[in-house]
Length: 302
Image (cartoon, rainbow, N blue to C red; front, top):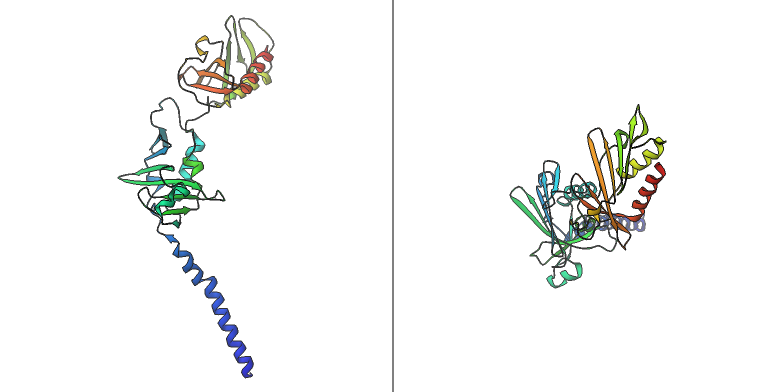
């Protein structure tokens, strides 16, 4: 090998080593400069027994017992199942995720939303509390800026926390939970009359006060709407200005293991209509579209 080729070979080896170092150890070293130990390390979703969220002065407390979650102060309403699924997912990730320092200046916390304007979260786990502030989402919305309440640093975590902790409604918006196919009777009560249909020999038929032709498809359509009816909003739980005291229309569906009664009130100028369940006295606002669709299916039944 000539001296010239030997020199070129050595240079190529040096360049290769430099390229490896630049894309490997040096790159990792540079990245680790901005990474720190996750201050939420140790948070274990399986051991969490309470989550408290302070959102703009409104406090939400979620209590866990076994695998079940309840909403403190809301005895009548369950917790939204999708919300709890998302919460459990985030709690299982957040303690093991890596965090990256984006600022050490306390004055810049406001620009990341990790000051007093952020969501204040407290997670209770046995005798240990984990406190953190959820700030703004990262520009690509895939991550979140977070901080310890009393720390000057702001970190970036590659988890979308705002869509979970920042939700406005945690109460379950589903109105009934039953299997339509198990229904045995439907009763419709108006201010001046009522009628009912029953399943006899596995076929739907008018029961009282008079006989008329009923098709299974039309009854199934009404039951389908009732079973899938959800609230557009959950209003203040009071009868005032709802029209519910008049009970202009009542629908009762009964069957194997359930007795669901829905009472209708007034509709608002916002195209929402008040309804109330008899068993729990829960008051909901459903869309006027759902209200009118149900009314039409009832009219088509006779």
